[in-house]
Length: 168
Image (cartoon, rainbow, N blue to C red; front, side, top):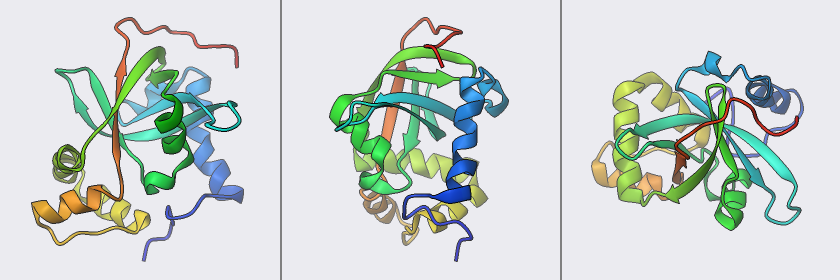
């Protein structure tokens, strides 16, 4: 059993710990994460309140200039529901903020991205699946079925990132 549970919304000290990377990005220090994390800016689907969410990069498609993330808590994640309803305002990669577009990967493409993630980060993949409460039988078909539960999103930054963001 995982020591951290991503199947429900974080609260208390765990939420504060998970919010720390967002403050690091907002301080223009996102370069410390290298290419492993990015931050998205989006609006609440009901409140229209602005939000920032830091996410682990699960894969990249350099030909399309895409950065791919997964929703570890599945379709119910607030950030996922927000971007599904209203898109994304911007993405922070390193210390650069840029407007971005997005696309939702189908389960087959997401399965291929996750297979590469498993190859590149084997131990992390096992721990993440445990924390997310998902697993599969080791087959390609099983992996694709699992990706129906933990969707992936590709962010496509605009060509010219800006080193500064909106007022903090």
